[in-house]
Image (cartoon, rainbow, N blue to C red; front, side, top):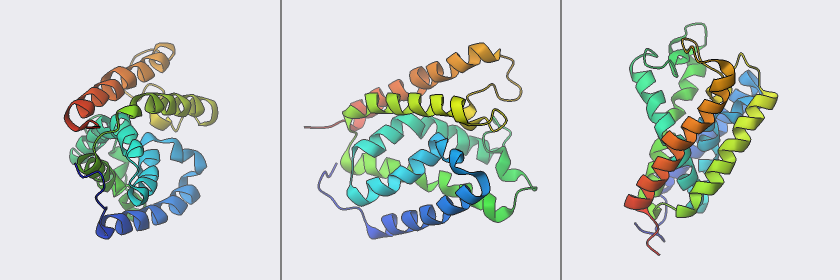
Length: 194
């Protein structure tokens, strides 16, 4: 880990340009509340992290979205057959150029992984990420449409878990199967050496 290393322009500039294109298009096509998706949050805050070499942000995003992004990438590789997270990428009713913008799911986890590798994992990330996830989930329940199911806070199609159980099970699963395990894995292998 090179704590004082620089981040190359070839990484920062294309990533920033992609974000500069995706942001206004998504706002126009999907509305402001679409940015509550955990993956969208991670994608856009990583612009700031790349330019400032902020270690806390990629550490938070790593424990918050790495397993979810892995599921999205597997779903994409299976044409949406696995879990269905990326099935919209193969929906011919959506313009190809619009679906292509969702390919940010490839450079975003790569940028997070690069930052963790280059600067190490900031062990302070656990509680801010838990707080962020809680705020986002509550905000989704309060302000987004159930039909949009942002961050899959309601049972997706094919899941027969009663909704009143699922709305508690989803954040508990996110915490116990994603955030906390990733924190300990990254802390163990890429933790702050200070």
